Length: 130
Image (cartoon, rainbow, N blue to C red; front, side, top):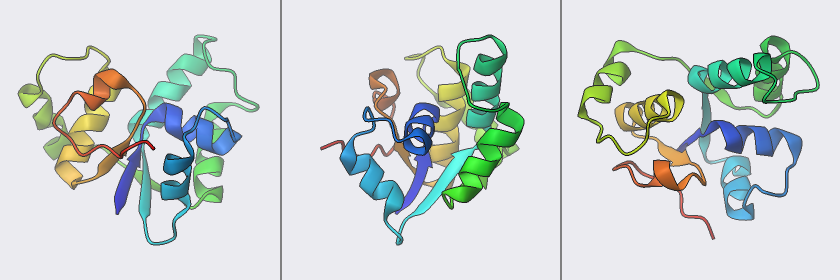
């Protein structure tokens, strides 16, 4: 399976947060799955860190890439083909970071790992939380 981590899922995973459902943790750890973190998530976390809304043990520009690599998660960039999906998304959610993750999941045929109910309302593959 090809998985795209929502920002909160990545942060919970790298910190060992118990809010991360075990079923999602197991999907991320499964060696047969390809796991991606979007540059959109790095952008979102960096913005929230600078606003004082996201405490991190180190500045995001070093901490996030190092954690992504440590956990063998691949980076996913933003391409024009992803951005054009924005025009086709229903206006269910106003968060621009989440909307871009949805576009990337659609463009790259990825299963999005999230617990965000607003994101789960979009027509994109979402991992089942058990």
